[in-house]
Image (cartoon, rainbow, N blue to C red; front, side):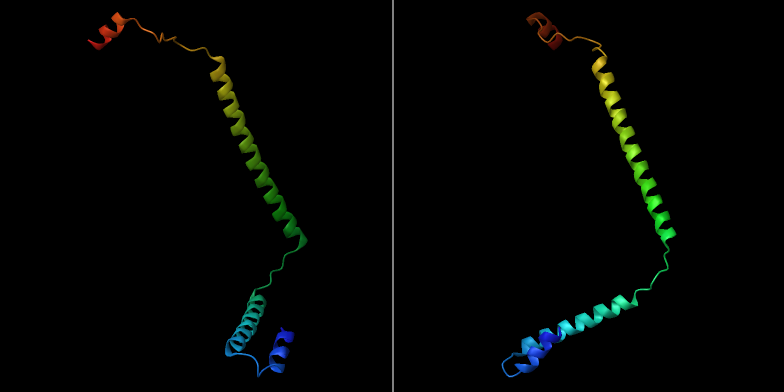
Length: 105
């Protein structure tokens, strides 16, 4: 940023108004960002706190994995049961002409 400002001062006769506006905007943005960064309230986390948070996240992740695996096992069992059970009734697709007529009447 210092380089940009120093070059702008050296070449002040050659630059247009838009360049000055963009430089001022950049400086203002940098100052506001620095102010917002400093205004963040610092927190006092100890390594133990991070360890506790990590353990909680790990436990939650493990529970989610177990739940997903259980759901997958249930689906597999359902498909195996469906595959192993024979059909209850065999339907004859082709019917005679007389049977069709009797169904229509």
